[in-house]
Length: 337
Image 1 (cartoon, helix red, strand yellow):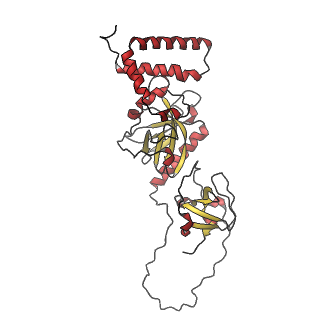
Image 2: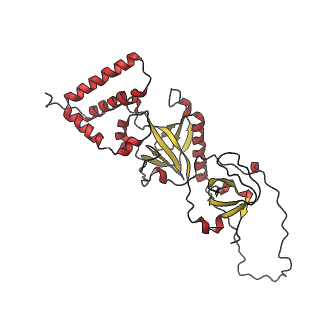
Image 3: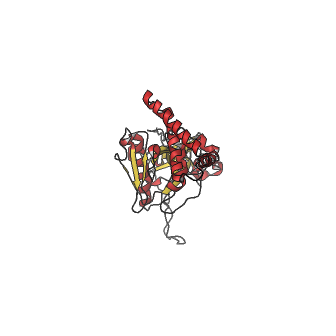
């Protein structure tokens, strides 16, 4: 009888993590025959310990059974599902700022999104140091979720004040060249691993773009001319009020600065049928150099969804159901409003 003894909660949690790692994570690994035999022995011993202390481990199993079914719909993960019990504490914002809960599919102005491995703040036991997370940059905030179907983020942080760099010292395995970290003075350091070095570099460039855009102190909206002569009446004759406009040469796309590539643009364009001010037409033929650029011909109608990157010479437009980047020098207003 063990009625007078009780296993500390930390030991129970640790044993549950070990059990999950051995029974689930190692299940899909290509183990040697000797390793498989050792795995079975450990599982048998863990089962015997649980049977000796049914009260302690029965409570743990009941807690696990009460987890929402949505957690089971997450994509395959090399990390133990049992480690999710620590997410709330580990992934809380270090600076105390808390953004409202938002579903992954409801994020707006997503500049980059995809699965990354996120390093835990408190490096845990065995394989729990890195956790697979669906990450997204929405405007100036970096969000991370358990999967792209989650109704609420596991954590987030504003990119303002942070810097980003590649860091191949975070891991010693084959993915050491796929790592990058986002840091700021007196704030938590966030470390991630991408699937490939190229993808990691894309994340670094996209975050750098957002940070530089915030530091520029420039509002990326179309500039409007100011007139100081309102109400003044000129006494000069009005004979030559029209100016002859010379046809401008077709600009080279090389002259239009290119912003870093973005994986996905999600912008709502409801009510555009009456939004005449944002209808433009092609001024010259334009062939997209990369998949996220629109290809159009002179006279094609393009609906402008966003001028967020006006300072770079690019807008986001939609034509025939396709959304992409448009060099603003290649289009002109369709309606004179």
